[in-house]
Image (cartoon, rainbow, N blue to C red):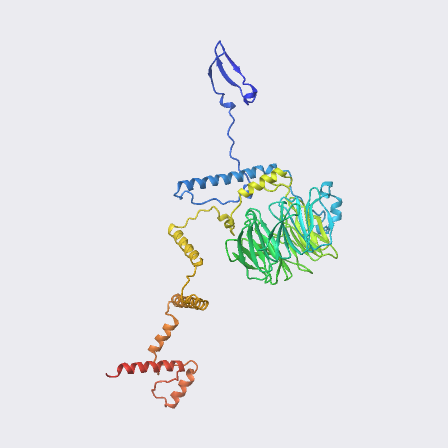
Length: 603
């Protein structure tokens, strides 16, 4: 007797999945057969996603088949498949994003968005958006500020010693202290539980309760602070033109560079490759990494001092004392647009997450839209004025259409439609994270911390295969080893009988330096002679002296006029033209004649 039995629901089978089986008269199973092919779920076809290139961050590796190492070849192919799978998942999940960014739109051809006042915009906002705005009137300004990466907490510090941390969701102050000395810059570190402040002499680290945790005495008279989140590095620069990288997870100084370009008051990081951009008083912008003692790029951006700077993707915005602010393309290091400003030079330049540019100069704030596109915008997107105040800092709040400005009378916020990203990645920066999620994320970030050596100007080179021949690679390694050995300080030997005195050591150093200069000069002379295909100048001069005769000498100072006078005095007869040689050439001729007479004298 054949009958169909349904498995119980506890076996995690769907009701539609029916397995036909055959039983005998006693109910025992005799034979089971597979379900028909029609009930098997068909395989999904490959879907071509048009928005996939937008999420691709890695280039396709070339020449993987030529890799001789089987293990390396399999690892590279696996990495390629994982990268492609990540791009496809990001592109496929784009349809699940709930929100889209919005902007201010003018109704008629005569209406301008920069004429909309904050009062008019606030009157048309919903209750939730209106609660994000505030205006704090404080008497310790001017104020600088910094947002946490998820945009929930705002840290601001006044020049007269006021430091406070504000929760922007609940509008509650986590701490509010006065350090009774100058505060030049503030920075939120890995999250709101640790913040840094550049005070009058040193850099201090505080917790979320305002309790001092550390005093970094190696960072003196600091003007700017930056934090690299993926490397856990706190970067400082200030009066003594010294760029310092400190790992906040271990407390060790990773690198310290002497810039030798005077005090630095402008520093921003490139979020794409963690390279620091520094603006100097001579109008140049230098790019620095912790593994190189000199700038990887040095570009002249203004004819005056650089006063403000920020980076967004492949573009950099700079402002200077020459009356202009510019947009630069970092792929070609060429200017895209330049704009004129009026009045006071910009004190701060800031990019939003969507590419809006905010400038603060004097009591004015301007926001420009589409400044990085090929078509140059003719007018700003929004404007706001604070009469009688001096604006020091402009910061856009992440994932919100809010811009915070720090001025001489306190801290205020503005509504800037389209400034923040509408969707966030909860694994990267979650504005609504709980205490447990924050702890788990901090542990995960520490485990995935990148080394400072991975900071390069081109991050796409990391993971690429070096296809140079083995001999070339070995030669490069040998040169690097020789350079490292030459830079290594040798311990001087202690000699007896006064041979290790300070005077002896100084004389030895002078002799070594003189021999080094002599070798360099000889190499330069050989290179100059070899490059032109001619012997060095000394050899050519000696050869000319050996071949010269008195009658054949001609001084360029005498010229043809002397020769013409000699011909006239001789009556036009055939007579060898004698031109008085220069003194140095005459002395060489006399010395050579003396040597010849000595050799020809009979014994």
